[in-house]
View 1 (cartoon, rainbow, N blue to C red):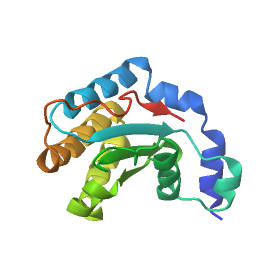
View 2 (cartoon, helix red, strand yellow):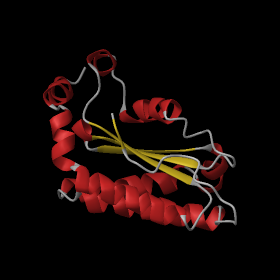
View 3 (cartoon, rainbow, N blue to C red):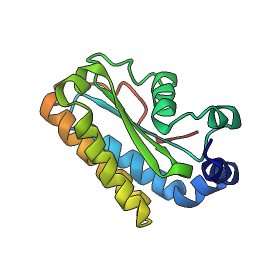
View 4 (cartoon, rainbow, N blue to C red):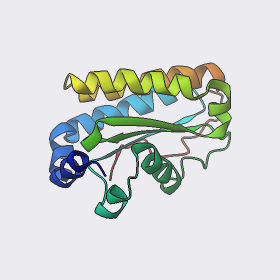
Length: 165
């Protein structure tokens, strides 16, 4: 058990999320998702969580494991072309995970997602949360546009509003 990580999670509350992602920033993220989805038939969700609950934290749950849970809970997998993508930020760890449904993941692979996560984490370390998230959304959107271009009659299958857990 990593005592420093446990203490960081226990001291990080929802107020930290509100400080880093006030309503203006959440609105900008929502607009970025909406703008990129005009160019492709995929679905992008962004979720941010201040910290893990105590039991999963003590059990050693990773940000990736939690992101997979959130992917399922938000039903990001529930798209017509299996091309939903979740960008998940665990604020206490400054860890970004991208979980992509099988329709898009099979075309790109883990390395592409990890590169986008790395760029976002670099921006976060510099304190640039808004621009880091928006750059990540645009990068994911570029890949979705290449593999799932927009088509007539496309409907928005999922909310664009960021989720604060």
